[in-house]
Length: 461
Image 1 (spheres, rainbow, N blue to C red):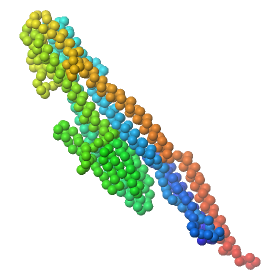
Image 2 (image 1 turned 180 degrees about the vertical axis):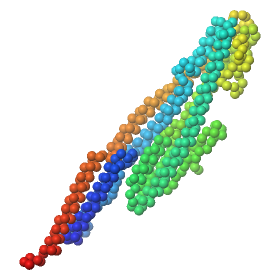
Image 3 (image 1 turned 60 degrees about the vertical axis):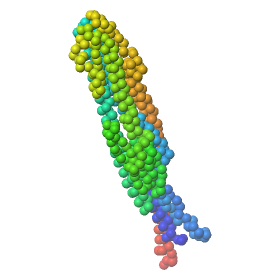
Image 4 (image 1 turned 30 degrees about the vertical axis):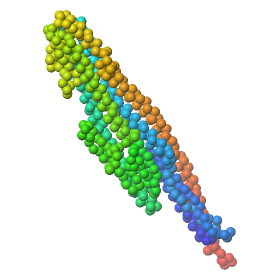
């Protein structure tokens, strides 16, 4: 094994190894600003001559590159995805609840609370001026204004729920699309790994897709063979090294055609977190509850108002009828046809006597009476609007907290995986010097061989 020619082989291996290391460092520098790129490191080891016992034999056969590895911390990846799921969920809640707050428009001079306050006040003004046609017309006008605002708020809540349903469908399609991309990458990774090919760039792309997937639902990634992974989404295995199970979207005929998500040949989706979990929860719980609260406010207030209105007398001394339309399916707080446009039919009196407005006072007192689920209309509205406001505030605070935490974890990840230009430049100089030294060895051995071949045996000629 000895001899000058073997020394050339050792030097050649050194040249190859250092050249490859320089190429890896150059690849790192080229991707220093590429999102999701993980820097590469070269692992080298000496080549030994196992079994050689002669002191005349070389102590080794040079150097070889064992592997080119990504610098990646799987623990930090798992932490990032976990917190990214929570961040995405709270950011989704924050955005949707802000829309709900805008719909209610509180506090505002043009909101529902202001309209109801104006309606109750108009009844007290009528009580003080029971013979005034203008005050009677004002009561009808303000009652209609309350009904219009209630109808508008309810309609916008229904539209918001429909918009959330469309987004649920869109996010389900996005989840399936990410899964298909990751599955394609898995197959490429398996094939290249089996052939000993370079898969680091594919692994980086897969990790970026898994980070994106973690914003939609709770994701658990388990390492498999041949650089492949198994991915659990919520309550179901979404991706294995050998296949993919997708979400399917059906429409629920019993719930206005709302989307129902389930795994193909599997259970319903339990996202457990992420944007999908927030969308489904708000679509199926908070928004329907707000709509129901609005309907309860209108229905029960109108029913109590009608009951007290029927106990009074109108301007002509006739018993009062319904003030609000009690027919099922009528618009919220809609005036009864017998009262609409007929201010004289308002039963402001407690007795058939001219100038009596005492029943209007009784009607105005419904403002503080426990007629809506055991609380007053004013309290019910305050709780309804305040509840959404509190949830919105909580979502804003938790979103900010999660955002800071995700930034911190991502900073830790990048400190491990991100390319440091100064460090790479120093490594290039180091590899360059090693390359130059190996080249110098070639030159020295060449000169030694020149002496042996051309000069030995020619002395004295």
